[in-house]
Amino acid sequence: MDATGPSPRRRLPAGRKADLAAYVEQAGEVTVGDLAEHFGVSIDTIRRDLDQLDREGVVIRTHGGAVSAADGQLKDRALDVRLRMQTEEKEKIARLAAGLIDDGAVVMLNAGTTTLALARALRNHRDLTIATNNLRIPAEISPSAFRDLYVFGGAVRAITQATTGPVAFTMTPGGPEVDIRCDLALIAVGAVDEAGYSTSNLGDAAMMSEMIQRAERTAILADSTKFGRRLFAQVAPLDRADHIVTDAPPPSTIAAALTQADVEVITP
Image 1: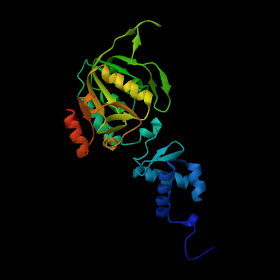
Image 2: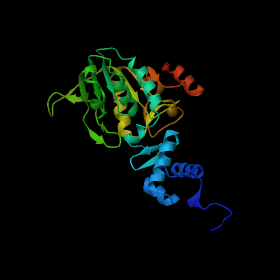
Image 3: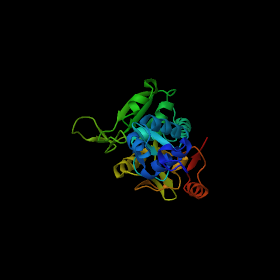
Image 4: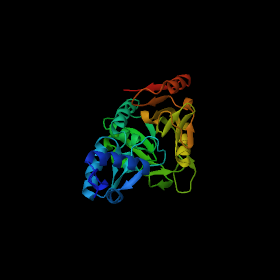
């Protein structure tokens, strides 16, 4: 063995962790087994390294591996991954958004981890009527917060644990659709730029757009990492929302566009 420098299998932990972080960022998603084989160390060592990198916000731990925490990746991520991302920011947004909802209101919530945080933040509300395509909300929301809770039917997207389909209900199977309206639609989006709000899935975008159309008021929920991005499917232009609830002020160009569109920016 060359004594002038360490072999790849004997690198200092700090050096290995830096290389591991770079490898995960390049690959996007990896398993513990792949990393152990690539770096020539034990699975337990890789798990400890990933746990530390997760605590430092460099990667996001998943069951059996990790994904990159890089903001530039625009592909869909599974719900268990997104639940680990921007958790503090989402909790701040949820508390602010809950303040927009009056007891007894009729609200629509779309799919997403931010709306899940909002559902938990409604524990002190009462007599709400909630309609959602988010299959996790019935398990997350306090039973004392709502009078009626409805889940829209449609095809289930396993990656988001939500339905995609029409924003509609029927009184009887095969019967006519009931026209439904709400006081406030709270819509979590994947991206916000000067052109409007967007998401990565066409079916989700159509459903979110229809929720907005059926609402007296609309609040867009987006953490600050969503600003300055544009995803595949446009949900609505900026002026279709009344409020945007976020964890930090948006960049100046987007802030100016929101002001021009008469959208109130709500931050902590």
